[in-house]
Each structure stands twice: as structure tokens, then as C-alpha cells.
Amino acid sequence: MDVKSAFMYGKIEEEVYVCQPSGFEDPKFPDRVYKFEKLMHKKFQMSSMGELTFFLGLQVTQKDNGIFISQDKYVDDILKKFCFSIVKTTSTPMETSKPLVKDENAKDVDVHLYRLMIGSLIIFRYLKGQPKLGLWYPKDSPFDLEAYTNSDYAGASLDRKSTIGGCQFLGRRLISWQCKKQTVVANSTTEAEYVAASSCCG
Image (cartoon, rainbow, N blue to C red; front, side, top):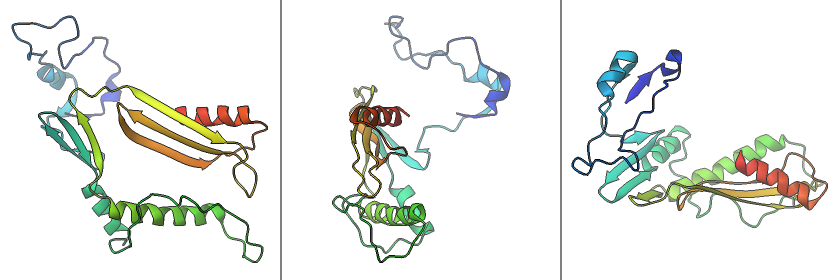
């Protein structure tokens, strides 16, 4: 359902279920749930859009044994938009063994812009080679959110800032990951770990 400007109406006080809550299942009618669509139409401007097929540009395919979320249409649109449809592919979304080192003979450049450009090119090349990758959620898949993080104290060779690595899982599926330099200079390994944990939770 698409609800327009729901925030203008304030919060509802009632609990709304789209499935029978645990402990209150009706054994005679296990598939029946409270029909709240007609009631919601009276309170909100909303429209029924049918079965979910796209979400934030990602394609959602529902099957009997689970849900598959793919990015191929989104990747295709992005590559066309930035004219990267013919780039060479790469198997990883970032360089794995090229530390940043200072070039004494090089001219000064906007480091942030340079990294953004290089990083974007590598990501585009990765997406070009992996358009069919997606997230598969079996019906019995848990939806616990788990996060892992680590830091490398003074790991950046140019300014001795620490680096952060982290990843987040929804159930057993990786949904987000980070690998970047900390914005502050940590005075100890412990401080670097705290900064990493805060970043990962954020």
C-alpha cells in the first residue's frame, strides 16, 4: 500500500497486525488476519499497489520458499546513466592490496574528489560484472540484525589515522559493509575500537 502524508495525521494508538500474533492463532482459520485496508482508507489518502515487485529500485521476486531481491535492473540503469555500460569488469568492489602512499613529485589534488572518482569507477566495474547478485531470504530465514566490526590502529600510512572495517547481516544475508579511514586520530587501540564500534552501529 502507498500511504500519502501519513505523518500529518499523528501516531495511531492501536496495535495493527498483518498476521495473527504469536499465541493468538485461530486453529480453524490460520490464514485470516484483520482486514484493516477499508478502515485505513477512511483515515489516510492511500492506494493499493498490489504485490510488492520493486523496492528502492531493487526487484523483489516472491516464491513459495522465500523472497529474492535482485539489483540487475538498478545496475543497468546506473551504468547507462553514467555511460559505464562498456567498462571492463572486476571481481571485487575495491582494491585489495594498494595502500595509499605519498608521491613527492605529484601535484596537489582534491584528495576526497580523487578517491570518490576512483572508488566510483571500481564500484561501477564491479557492478557491471555482477548484475545478477542478490539477496535470497528463505521462508524460515531469521531476521536478526547482527553487526561485526574491527579497526586497524594507525593503519593509514599517510596520516597514521586508524582504519575501520565492518559488516551488517540481516539474518544470514550480508546487507551492508564498510572499509574506511577514521575521521579522528585515535590515541590508543582501545579508542580506535570504540570509534569503529560507534561507526558500525551508526
